[in-house]
Length: 547
Image 1 (cartoon, rainbow, N blue to C red):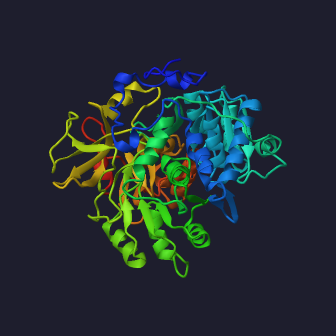
Image 2: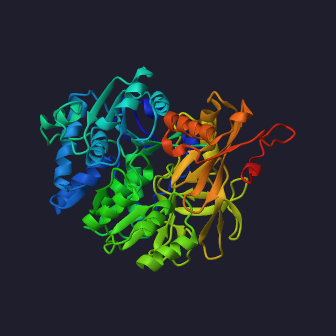
Image 3: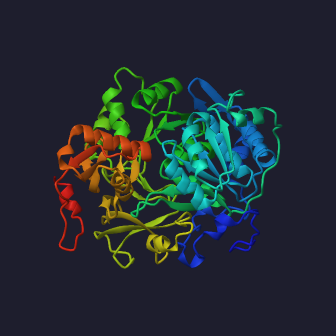
């Protein structure tokens, strides 16, 4: 198979490529910036990130820190080489096949991610909190035949396997790859496999990773990124704020999401930094990790930053020099409280799963508090009108972005047409741009509720609640919350109105937690006699935010 640029693909399994939208629906890609012109036609992103770091003399430097264990760059490469060999020889992976990854942040998850790319496979990262039904959708959508999973998360993936025809093999691992007994079959295999094997010379435009992102219909969208996209995302991000070799990065995002993959793995590798992985990024765990490993750069969300402020006590945070925030809107009051307490300016940027990285960011000086800064070098951004045409400064509309990464939804041309207009990646976020070029976030157009950094589809939560036997009708909205940005509120009409009790609310919340990822559950439950509707029967959601 030849790719649009004429370079033969290294993928013998072409299923994922066949799902890409036609090139006429792709956004306009721009590699004209000086730092984006050097990519060859063949790139294996795993090799470009890790092997080159070892070759440049960073082999004995710390790369992954996890609890009291430290993996140097050279040790990580050893694990990745062995895993890639196991994937091919023992698990039958062919270039182009999709591999589902399921784990909390851990060194072995990072090694698995890199090994899949090294062997020519395509990573499909998933949140450790997803339930079987959600995993089934991902597996069926991409016809996934192999999953690599933390042994502690076996139950839901086994339930998903029972409901899927394509998922043939699951290999289990422990966080550090040292569970040589019991169910951790992958740990045992790598111990009996030699390092030093080669890699698949993938084309720069071969798909490397597929990420799922929520949408207004409630069904997750599968967005594809190429090997070249991974390097471009890293190379653009360094320009607003430099990360120096030897810095120590950590944060709250999990590697089931692009924010977590980039901040915990891709950026540290590209900048030759160290990454502190926190499996359960609670406030206490993160504070302990910062103090223990002398974290210098923190990537987080406003909710977590507020928690750190409130509970920092005598914890040592003096090593911090940089703080990045994304995933939800940062209140100016919180920015100021953080600065007053730490002397550090929070750098709030904007990105998306479809774009892989942040595309708007202030500089380290944060010239205008409350603004999301300007377009990251390598990207162009503007405000679009309803017809997808750029507005003059001062206008309000959807954000349009062009650059080296962009939206390619798999098997969903209709959503692709909405997400890309006139060559622009069009977000569902409403912005204003001032006369000096700074972008200011206004809100979202669709039904996505951004709560504590998580994107939650209101319609997905509605469907789950509607299946509860006691529920007659329901509607889900987001309501402002000073700590989490927004809360998920479920407004419910019960079949038996006399059962509108706190106990029933708890039962419905628990039902949602057991059915889909727990972070999606409604933290507020309001029982109503009826839902407010227009004469045509449409729910008046704005009124539900006022009840």
